[in-house]
Image 1 (tube, protein in one colour):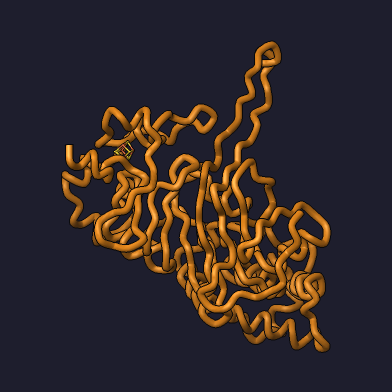
Image 2 (cartoon, protein in one colour; image 1 turned 90 degrees about the vertical axis):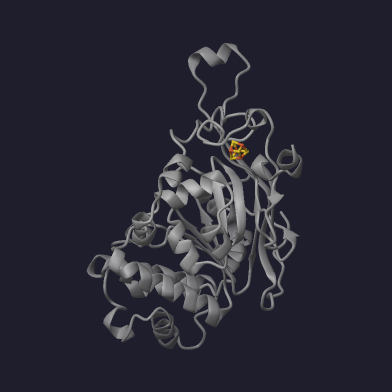
Length: 348
Ligand code: SF4
């Protein structure tokens, strides 16, 4: 195991990187397979690259089963990786348990989708926050003041109204704020937020996203925002990356990716998003662009481009050649893994 680097990152500094990150889950072997050499695996994540910087939000967008939550769990070191690397401040880092894992968690905290499941129902809010402060050595000389500060930071005020409540006595939004406060108790540099608002009422989602954005700015946090809702990525994230069937297919600044999507799958995601303005102006052409079918099996993923069985503009090479990331147009940093943007293809 590589030791955890001590230095804190300055503004905009790279905190956490995934480089060629890969995760295959072995599939339990069937009786018939015992007599063969078959070792099937779910190809959940393949060759994913992403960079989290201080003071920036990166959205990872995709439908269920695209591998985006697995990426978050790999970055949190909750799963061992099959291949690739995770670098914390440029240092390759692999931790499993014990003090090394705790040191890593102090720098990289995860927020889960279901705040009710992530809080222990038999313990008060005080217990959850005290534990976080004490485990990470951040209680200071005055525990009560530290608890109040944590709750104030997530806008649960006055703090004394919440400290001795149990999770079931709070609303979904308040519980997610407590989960965020607990993560802040570690004084992390990076937050991995896995669908943090998808289980909340629509009316309170914006408040929690605004809170995360405020924390990003005030505490200079690096945030990974996992979501299936590409519209919220535009609102909340600086960069947006799109995942399909375990692979990254498009990336760039959020405005460009959501307003000028290049990859046919990103266009499909945007066409499927419930946006009243867009639906009012939806054209037949947009309908023609819409891909059909279901996501593919990740045990035997399609060869070439994994989107080719659903892609309305697939070409012969798409079923055989794996697309590489290609730059799009004049917007720096905008890329798509799609043969439509291969200059040789365009010229022919
Ligand atoms: Fe469609 Fe081919 Fe592009 Fe894949 S590489 S998205 S199949 S055009």
